[in-house]
Length: 435
Image (cartoon, rainbow, N blue to C red):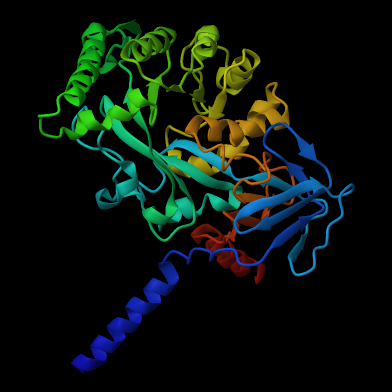
C-alpha cells in the first residue's frame, strides 16, 4: 500500500508540473525565415508598406521594399503577412517583472532590500525567468524589459533581459546597466489622519537628505582611490557611474527636484543620467536637452498629481516633451505595475490621441527606450544586422482592439504566445460556447 501511495504521489507531482510549469523556451533559429507583404514599422519613424524581411541566425539579414526588390526565397520558411503589420519588440523599462510573482506571498516578493543605500544589490540575481506574469507580456508584443529594484535612497542595480529564457543567465541582454536612486521629496503632504494640513509643504529634511546622498557618493570616490582598504561592495557598485559603464537613473518628478538632481549628477561627475518619472520635466525641458538627459516618463494612464493641473496632463506629457526635443520613453511603474506592463503599447496609443503621430508613439516603446538603456545597437528597430526581435500583428499594435499577435521572435527564436491566461480563456470559451 505504501508503494502505491508513492506511485500516486509521483503521478500527482508529474501532472501538476505538466499543467503549471513554465513552457519551454523556444530553440535557436536554424532555418532562414522570410516575412513577406507586411507593413513594417521600423521603429525610427519610417514605414515600409510592402516589406520583405529575412531573418538569419537570429539577426535581420534583409529588410527591403518587396515591390522593388525581388529575392530567391527557396529553402526558407516563408510567412505570408499580407495585410498585417511587423513591429520591433516592445521594451518596458524600470520594471519589477520577474521579481514579484504574487504580492500576497512573501516568498515570491524579491523587489526590495532592507536598508537605504544598496547600489550593490543586483536585481538580475533575483530575476525569475519562469514567471507566469513575465510570460503574459509576449502576446501584446512586450518582449524585453529592464528589471529594476525598489525602495531605499539607492535601490540597487538593474539589468536588461529578454522574456523567453531558461534562467537569468540566458535571459540577460545587458547586465548591471544602471544604478537607481529615489531622489528626496522637496515637498511633502501633511498627515490628515493626525490632524495635519493635508496640503503641500516644504520638506524640512530635504537639504539634509541630499547632503547624505552626496556624502555617500564622495566616500565611494575616496574608497576607489584607496588601494589598501578592504572591498566595500556598495561603494564599488557606484564606480561605473564615473567611468560611463553604468547609467544613473534618478526617480524624481517635481521641477525643483529634477533641477537639483541634474546639478547633483553634474557635480559628482556622473557620465550619464536618466530622469525616471519626470512629471514636471516639461518645465525644465531646456535644462534636460542641454545636458543630454532623457526621461522615462511617468505612466500615461494615471491621474493628475496636483488639483490645479489639467485633467489630461499625464496623457499629453509625452507630446510636451517630444516637441521640446527631449528623448522620451514610456514605463509602467506604479500601482499593479507588473500586470499593467502588458498595456505598454496602449499607453503609447494614448499619446497618439494627444498629439503624437503613431510612429512617434511607437518610438517611445522601441528605439527611444533602447537608446536610453544602451541596447540600440541590437534592439529597438527593424534594421539590417540587428537582433531579429520582432512580432507580427493582425493590425495596429498600439490599439488594443487590433493588437492581435500571430507570431513573435526573440533573437530569431519563434517564441510561444501561449500563456496561463490564454489557456484559461480557451478553457472557459469552450465551456460557454458548448452551452
